[in-house]
Structures are given as C-alpha cells and as structure tokens.
Length: 242
Image (cartoon, rainbow, N blue to C red; front, side):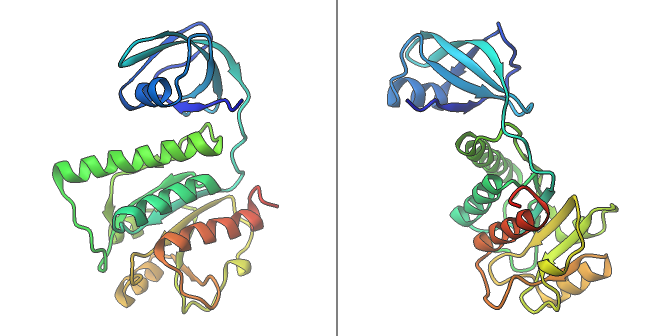
C-alpha cells in the first residue's frame, strides 16, 4: 500500500501531535478515506520525513501523532535557483512543478518586458501563496523533504544588479555557448524568459551584469519546457543525475 506524504509548516518531532485541516483533511479523510491507526508521512521542509499515525478523524480536522523521524532523500549537490519570468496560469505552475521535481533549490519570479501577467497587491500575494503551494505539492509527490523557497517577484533589472559569487546564466536561443561548455559549478542562478523570451535590451543588461547567455540546442522551447530541460542537463553535468 502506498504511504502518502503530506507537507505541513508545523513543527514536527517524535511524540508531538499535529492537526491537519481544510484541503489536506478533506483529501486524506474524504478522498483517501484514511482510517484511525493508518500512517502517513509528514514533512515540513527541515530535511526529514516523519511517520505519523492518525489518532482522530473529525469532519474537518485530522489529528496525528508523530511516531518516528525517518531518513529522507538527499538534496542534489548542485544548488540551482530558477529566475523565472512570470508566465500565464498553468505555464508558471508547470515550470515550478517540474523544476521542483528535478531538484531546483529556489525560485525567483521576475517581471520583464514581455511578461503578459501584471499583478499587484492582494492578487499578487494570493498568486505567490498559490505558487508556494504548487512547489510544496511537487515535493509531496517527488519525495523531497526540503521545500524550495519561492521569493517575492521583482524586476529583472533588480535581480541582475544583485551582487553575488554564483554562476549566473540566462537561456538565449542565439547564444554562442551551450550548457556543456560550462566549468563545473555548485551554485547556479538560471534566468528563463517569458513567452517570447527576454528582449534584446534585457539580454544586453544581463550581460552587462555578468549573466552569461547559454543555448539549449537548435530548437526554441516554451518557457515551461526550457527551465526543466536546462535543470535536467545541469543535473547530468554537475548534479545527482550523473
């Protein structure tokens, strides 16, 4: 029988009791029909999994007791932060989901010239929480016990001006260099454009701030495909796909 993994931001340690409510309680109790005495795996992003037994099932709430701390999947030795231009609806969700499954360590959404989505205030806050939920759900499915951080969206130029020692790349179909030309690295920031890609002026700005353009082969990929393809290639070169 499959053991279900569930993310919760609550503190977890053997012997403590945890309550799940709302969507999680409905899914486990109503959809999966979890019975008292059954075990699920809870995780909160601290790098461990926690075996947890269902003690009580109410209509809108489930109560668990954490019974054991479990070893979890190791994270990739390659830390990749995806600097993803905000894209529409499912495309952004797909990029976050697949990159999380492939081992991305963090996400920095950015606004750029060709971004078609413009959100502010409460709508932007709700979308950010939605993106974080997508990432947490991808960790539940893929077995990751570390949840990648999804940072607040900022302008592309603001990100480009940030200081740092990490290798910084931008995907550009016309670039002279490929990912295979890179020297071994342990920390990479990967900028991925929106539908239509980054503008020429944006690419020049990025290069001026030390962001290196790299190509992913002869084909032009959709924004939700490009980031995942690049991470898979980088994991093969420097990460845990070797």
